[in-house]
Length: 288
Length: 169
Image (cartoon, rainbow over all chains, first blue to last red; front, side, top):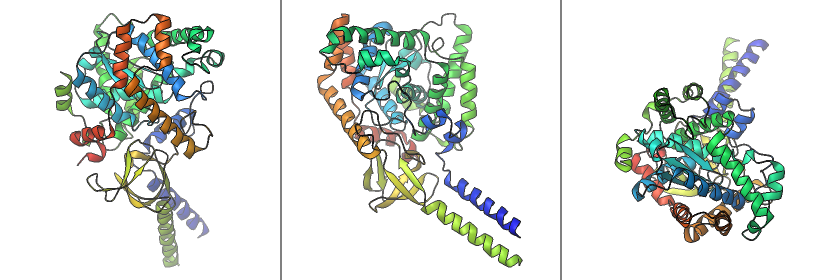
């Protein structure tokens, strides 16, 4: 009898637990709630020790400086106001459901033949016209933008700055101190970050993390989370035939098959993706 | 005997069910969230729910959750906008206490945002560009990017038109 009651109690607790887990609490089950990644994804912790105390204004200044370098490297924004507005709407929609929803994000389509997207600290996000051109619907665009929002939310680029470099070079940066030695240190730090963002790429675990965050925020927003997978599959097909990879999403990111496999595993946890928004018609209308 | 066990099991289940609904806390994790009178976006707002707001679940549901705020307001919130984990406060908010620092950081971010809408590049970035000799056309391009701001009303209209998330039928 006692055993039966104990079993009944255990069953009851399990049942109550499963009732608690809502539709939108799936990600931590996928990743594991107590892992570092799980905590980051659930927004329960800020990530970096060396840059944890950096105020938003400083982070944004670093981001703006990097954005200036990125524009010179990849090209100016496409002169199509309606397109730029559209990308900002899709980007803001997913950013509002990211793990860092309260900072101002800005998105821009660059006139570049290289299939690429990148973000700078503080929330400035670029996508190339070439990458946009291989997409077929809004869910795909949402997936890629949400991946870049994930890097900003996780402060992934900032995490590559050495602690000493941050404290001596950036800790109290102002327009006045930008002129002296501190300014030189700031420039050297932006140079290092350029190398990471535009040439070497971030650590592959951070890319996987941004992928996981992207799928979750796209899903929470109401987009079909398969969008990101579909873009990666298209890139995979292009990669198989293209020889040149420099500076693209191919060269600065981990192998596409590994990313796709991880996202496919995550996708299984979402119960109702067939009903979610894809919007191919609106995408075609606003981007062509 | 069997009847007693059955009754006890039923009682346990009922108690656990009540506990799962009544004691549950969720936090608002998405920007632009509102407490709605009914479980639909077309119903009136009861109150805005800033990121970090704690909510007590009254009744669970798949897409819409019935909740109560700390000051006793009841209504519905879209499930995609809340989490069972409290979101972290934005760094650099000051005192480290969640509520205040989150609020402060939101104000700071809003200030930064509106300042950029008017002035474009920050003085620090303008100085950086000068030191680096960045051509004016690139500074202007970034200025324009920073000034392009989506308003909450525009975002809502965009989501409604696409029938996305809480606007889905």
